[in-house]
Amino acid sequence: MALTILTTDDSKFQRNVIKKELTALLKDREITFFEATNGLEALSLLKSEKIDLMFLDLTMPEMDGYQVLGKIQEEGIDIKVIVVSADIQPKALKRVQELGAVGFVKKPMDGKKAEPIILKSGVL
Amino acid sequence: MSSNIPEFTEDEYDFLGEITNMAMGQAGSALAEFLEVFVELSVPMVKIVEAGQIIPVLSDMTQEYKEVSATRQAFYNSISGEVISLFNKDACVAVADLMGYDEQLDPAKEEELILELSNILVGACINGLGGLIKTEVSFSKPAILCERMPIKDLLNSVFAPEKLNWDYTLILKVDFKLEEREFKSDLLIFMSDESIEVLRNSSDKFL
Image 1 (cartoon, each protein chain N blue to C red):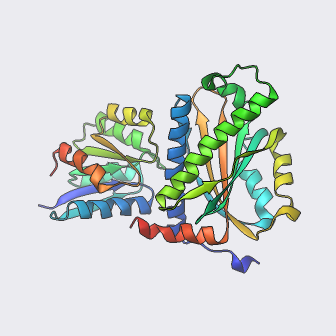
Image 2: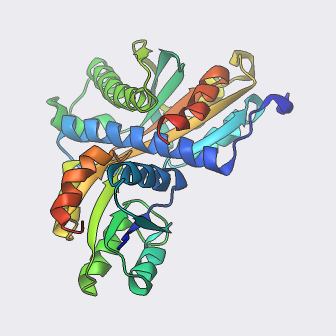
Image 3: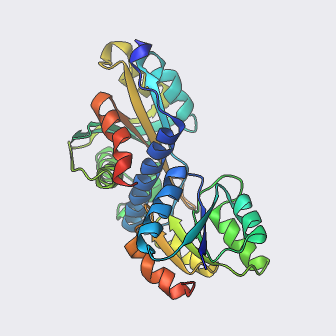
């Protein structure tokens, strides 16, 4: 079965980097990508589609990444989230961990850095 | 003149905004580590501006400031340009204790502190930018432009028409604020001609 991955970022460039890195990393897997440009779109896709793994930016219009993580917890949505962030301060990392993210990688996402987190998430 | 101004597509603006955002993230992290505080980041601005419009555009970008202390620092190599670092007038006092200074700062100490902060922010941000596009960047030493001067006077003096030797410039603006302290700093990064093309053409290093 194809792996379904949701990339959430207001930047098309960053969404493309994630797609490129994951396609190279998981080259033996069939992947179906969904894309959201803000938190609201992402939440709506999480409800309408069966998503295995989500990549999430923190700074976005409409609803930011912290708010998305909050909603996922609040509504009990079953999804593994990896945060991809330009803000690499320890406090940002700590905050997303508290909000239930399974991992945190810095932008631009490097597939090799994301690999152990993806393995740990158990979605493969 | 305006026909020479490069036009960016939506995707190119997106890319420039993102590399600026990632460089800002690195600078924010360097400042956070240096001061041991959390640095609030916001969304960077990217703009191409003609010489004749530079003062109104910058006035608009910096309207949160009244009086500022500022430095300038040049960088060069495959990308070259200049960074003006702005600090709110009481920025020094707000972080003096974190940097091991007395809160009663004499002008010499204040200068030293502003130069040190500029160096950290500009160094991390421009090295971040260079690292992202896989190029080395060198720096001149930062120099004080003004201390506690109305922002309007600073802009009118630095960007007086007779001093401008370019027709247009790319401006990247990033800003840093500290939680619970009266500290705010903006970096205004200026680049022209070839550097703009180097940046524009570097997106294929990622994709």
